[in-house]
Image (cartoon, rainbow, N blue to C red; front, side, top):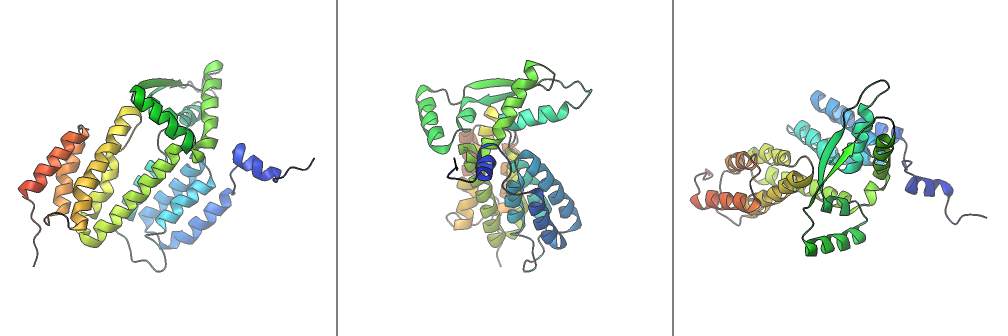
Length: 291
């Protein structure tokens, strides 16, 4: 019986074989390398290897295409590219159960004793691993039942026996990652981050590094991760975007971002951070000097 779809394509989609081979990403890296500063070149090379292990060569190509926005034969030198490249790789390797399981298995090399990894996730993180339509339904039900932020601790270990089988089963779910709601959400976040970097670069170039560093407030998993995302959105929606849109009086965005990022380092509640930003704008102590 002849299958209606080529078996290789079915294998690639459902059994996890990358649709492209590593040499495709390596070729794109070789094309981009001559236009990268020495410090950035090593960061990007390491990121490509890391992202192929995390997901597949296609995922590494997405990273390289994003780096290519700032480096190329027709691009001016970009002083902040190394900072963008390192942070973008870290965000594209976001923490989810499959990635923690992969890390646990990697730690348990032959003859080594790997400690058990205990990581906290919210129930909404598990819903986010589903395809978008199913995830949206699950998230609505969780929100109605007020269970979205309920914490669940998973344990991963490479020790022989059922613990390793449990960890391997979670690691296999990485093959479904690209079809999940979480992957689409993370992709949208990275794109918005890069978009806001470009807007700040055009309006107040001296504030670009501050905008790049806003990515640092998002890390980890579970409640800490969700609070970081919420605080990042507050910073962009209440400070950076209004400044770029000209919706508020001109201020020194670089100085304002330093103040706000210092406050965000303590992981305040988003409403608290928004109040601090509103007071900062209202007092206007950071008036932009214009000629």
